[in-house]
Image 1 (cartoon, rainbow over the protein chains, first blue to last red):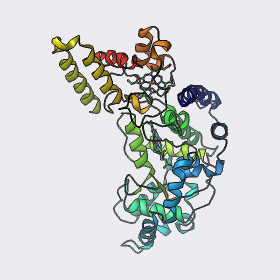
Image 2: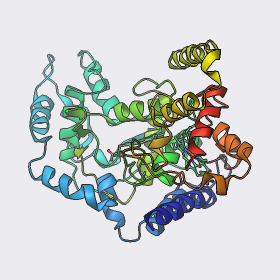
Image 3: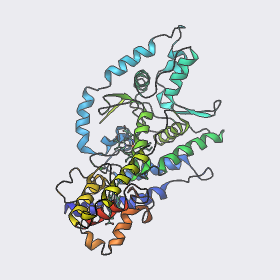
Image 4: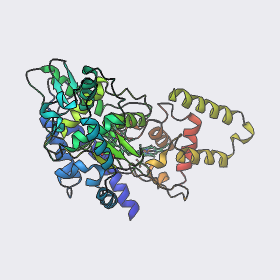
Length: 288
Length: 120
């Protein structure tokens, strides 16, 4: 009986693959429609996991997998990122050698702004991420940039996310600059393109394969992916940035991962974050 | 680099298999190789997606259908081999890697894993 059920599930997944493709808007500038993509993705997960609330997708795999959720809820009672947020606050408020600080670089003194990142920067003609602007702030004030993956940059980013908790994610694709939509499209293509020796796309695991076991791992739904970064991962034993996670998953398709903050990873973050519009910031998060 | 190591491994294995003509015909050896391909993370890693009723196949995933009634579902063994060699032929969006086409497995390893799964 169990076997028959599993078989049906397997076939169901194969069918779902076709569905995702059909529900999306196009893959070229003429047809791509970010808002239609966002609605289609929500509808897709709503029909896949009817018992999960859309607002709960910010909790990753725990939104759809009841059995690991309990463990995670216990973990969240004494959040493993608590100290890192405190350290981040201290770092954030420690002045640079020139007497200025991070607060001088950001809108609203850097408090409660996470929900607006990443954003399309028209002057620079590129997507800016929060981590990127943290380092730009340092360099503008004569300080050395921080390493991207973990450590101080993740702590500062975690503190900034903390001050933005529960704010609705608000990614805009300005219509007065066609390059913004092109950046979104680039990120979307990266997400759906098959790559590497294993011929895997991000969507293979995080859309059609979401909440289905690959050995002992359960990939989360892509909806909600970026809301809680930086993340404290038990496997890392520390905080890490979103691009650190991108690199790890990119490598899992047996292809060579790219560097932190390269243009296509920023575009990927732009695309993924746009999908989360309407959900709220809940960083930093904790994951297995 | 990774690709290079994989192909070196594959080449090594090929050498191993071909350099031992005395055992080449031995069915048990082929089945043992097939089982190793099925279970080993750096080879086929089939178990990460397909359950199979081999007691050593623990922590199987369920991305793909369980491997059972193979003889019934694939009366033509060549069709089974083709699915393993390049699953994207049947379904371009499949999550199953093209194990032959992308040189993840050698031809010998594919023959072996076909024989191994054909028992179930």
